[in-house]
Image (tube, rainbow, N blue to C red; front, side, top):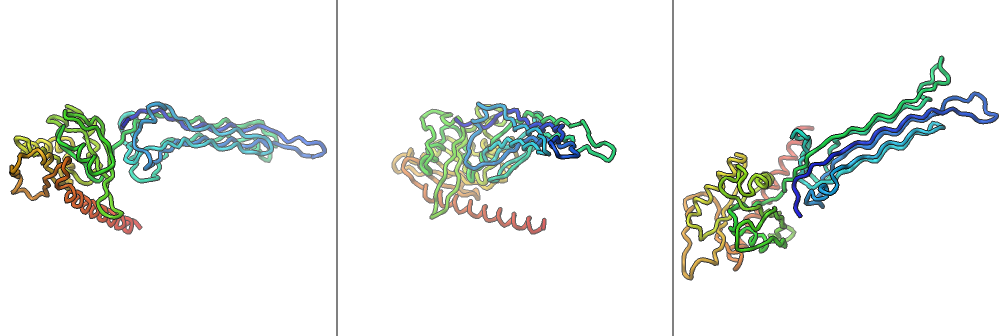
Length: 341
C-alpha cells in the first residue's frame, strides 16, 4: 500500500535526575558528596533512507518517543544518555509542523534533521560543593523532553514523470519499460497511487520512471485524484506527456494537461518535456498518423506499449536527457561548494 501522508506525535527523552549521595567508607576520612549527574535525554532525529518508498509504517505507529536519560548514581557516576528516536523516512519526505510550516526537506541519502533535542540531565550534589558548603544536600531534576505533532508528506523523486489523462496507456508503458507491475485495465483511473519503475537504457545506465494517476480537467481544484498526486510531479526532472493517438484532439489534450500543471505550479511548465503518442497499434491498416504538433519544437514519439513500436528510441532519448541533467546538477553542486569555500 502506497501511503504518502502521515501525522505523528514525537517526543524527545527527558533528562535523568541528578543524584544526592555521600561517600561513607570505614577507615576512610573526610568523606563527602559524590552524587553523579543525570544523563541527557535522547533526541528525535529524522533520516532519509533510500530503501524506503512509503510512509505506511507511520499509520501503525503514530507516536514515537526517544529514551529518557538515566539517573545519576553515587561514586560520581553519570547516568547513561537516552537513545535517540531515529525515524527513517523515504527520500523526498517533507517534515512540516502542525500549522503547515516546512521544517525539513529530506532528499539525499543519509540526510538527517534533528527536530527535538532531549532534556538535559540534572546535576548531582557533588556539583554544588563550595569552600563554604562542603556537604550540599541538593540535586537537580532532569529537564523534561519536548513534544510535537508533525505532518510528513512524501513526494516521489523520479527522473521522468508520465503525465496524461486516465486510460492513456501510462501504466502499460511503465510495465513494458521496467519491472514494475502496475494495474492495467480498459477503464479509467486504474492507477490510484503513483508507481515507480527503474528503466535500463544502456549498459550500467538507468533512470527512474514514475507513473502518476491520470489527470482530468480541474485537477488543480481537487477533481479526480488531482491535488493528492500533482505534488509528486514537482520532483521529476523531465515530463513525458502521454497522449492517446486515437483521441479526437491530441492538441486539446496537451493544452488541458499543461494548463492543469500551470495552475498547480507555474514552475512545472519550465521542466523539459517530450510527447509520446500512445496506442499506435490501434491505428487501422495503412492508416497514417497525422501529427498535430508538426510545427512545434518539441520531441515527439509514436509508440505502442503492446507491439513495442518506438519504445527503444523513446528510452534512449529519455536516458540521454536524464544523464545530461544529472551532469549539469553535479557541476552546479561543485560550483556552489567552491563558491561557499
